[in-house]
Image 1: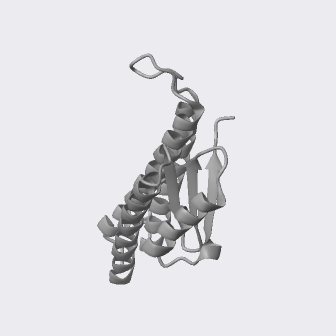
Image 2 (image 1 turned 135 degrees about the vertical axis):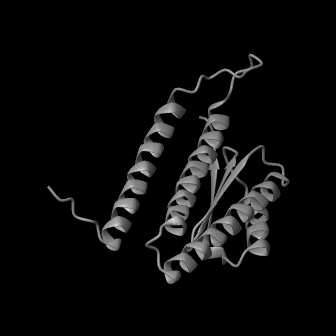
Image 3 (image 1 turned 45 degrees about the horizontal axis):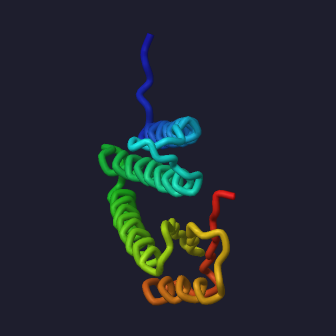
Length: 167
């Protein structure tokens, strides 16, 4: 019996489907494992729901990004990738690195305004800022908005500021 050789497109589809499946499995495992996080820290102090929420958000974001980088690396290392596809994958990797750096800077600047913790997520259309505070005053929102607008190209209508409390 002869085994038929797969076409270049079929190989790409198989690689991409495998990576998507891996992303789904990783996300599911991350969700399940985060649910099983013990509520006490190493020093015996109780970990609050807010701390778990912010830690979980960061872990999920890092997992998703790692999967995106793995997909892009698969494209870059594939023998069947065209020059155009490789250039596009390299460009996307650079964009992701830029977003990661900008989110970290923004989180630090928001925390510098007196918030215990913050998570910033950026997409093409908007930027979300979640801060560890049960309620926000208009001055606090204005301060966060000022930081975001001064450090990014987003406009005020693209920025969503959300308070988070463990209640």
